[in-house]
Length: 282
Picture 1 (cartoon, rainbow, N blue to C red):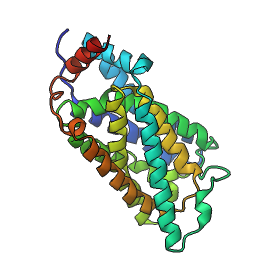
Picture 2 (picture 1 turned 90 degrees about the horizontal axis):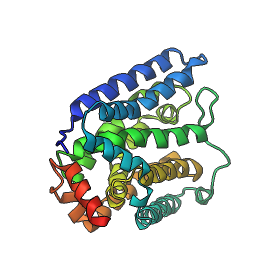
Picture 3 (picture 1 turned 120 degrees about the vertical axis):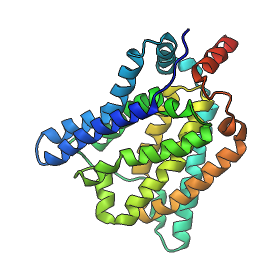
C-alpha cells in the first residue's frame, strides 16, 4: 500500500476553526434553544474532520487503520484498562486523604447524588457520554497519530496534552458547562484544569498504545474518567491536589514504560508498523 504522510497542522487548524466557530455561536445564542445544537456541532468537529481527512486521503492503509481502530475489539488488552482504572482510584484516594489531612471533609470519599452542570437543559450524563465517544473518534481517529507520526509518544503526549487543553478554552465562557463553573470559582481552577490535561493525556496515550491503538479502549477510559470526576465528591480545592498526584502518576507510568514512551521506531512509518504488528499477531 502507498505510504501516507500525516498533516497535523492542517488537521488542527481546521478543528480549532470549526469547533471554536460553533462554540462562539453557542455563546452568542446562549439564552436560546440553539445553545445545545451549537455546542454539539463544535464537539463533533474533531471527529468529523478526522473521518473526512481519512476518507478523502486516497490512502487505503489509512482507511484500513481507522476501520481497525473502530471495529477491532480484539485489539484491547483488558489489563491496560484495569491497571489505569486502579491507578486513578489510587490518585483519588491520595488526593482526598491529603485534603482531609489539612482539614478537608471526609465526605469527599462518597459519591454525589447528581452532576454539577447541564447544557441547554441536556443532562450532564448524556453530555459526558457524547463527549467521551465523539472526542475519541477525532483525537484517536487522526489527531494523536498525526503528532505521534513525527515524535516519540512522550513528546506527542506533551504536545497533544497542551493542544487538547487549549481546545477547551471557549467552554469557560459558555453558561452551563463544567468549565464555566470553574471560571466562576476563580482563575486558579481554570489554570488547574488546563494543566491537568497534560498528565491525563499521558495516561490516555498509555492506554491507547498498550491496547494496540484501540479507540474503544480510550473511549472506555475517557468515559470512566469523566464520570468519576463528576460523581466522586471531591471539592474544587481537592481537584487541584489531584492534579499533583495525577502528574506523579504520569511520571510513574512513563518511568515504568520507558521503552514505549521513548521509542522512535514508529516515527515516519506508524501505519506500516501497525500493519506488521497485526500480521505478526494473526
